[in-house]
Length: 209
Image (cartoon, rainbow, N blue to C red):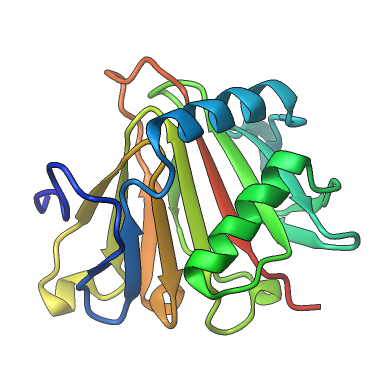
């Protein structure tokens, strides 16, 4: 395991994460403490959280987190055999989208919200490379609440001699992934039993219709 890509205090400005075949920018204090706390409380209380179930053969396995899908009318998202129909933007989600669009220079028409209730919730290795996201999607990931580890692994890690990269995603932080990142890198949020608090992650994206 590699050490944290960033550690210690930061002034909130964007910093590029230098990794091969990736274009990543991390803003550890995109929202200040009060803004992040207010957004977390509002979203946890008002979003239409659900726990979907994946089917493996004859078994049904609940996804180890809650999620909700919001966006412009007609935006659908399919992953792991699930098809999500977008709910209308809430005022809070729309305000966050506008702020992130201004900071990133990208346009987004939808957001996948994930609620990690504690460190037992997680998401497995994957890439955001579904066809409806286009060839080189821009994914903007806003974190609220408990600090959780975000790990990245190159698809050819062994050949390139690269270990797993780890970034501790702070409350109010923004991570923007661009270019060919999703072609070459997988990412996950691993289980962390020591974490007892909840985290909300919002991944803003643009659906190609």
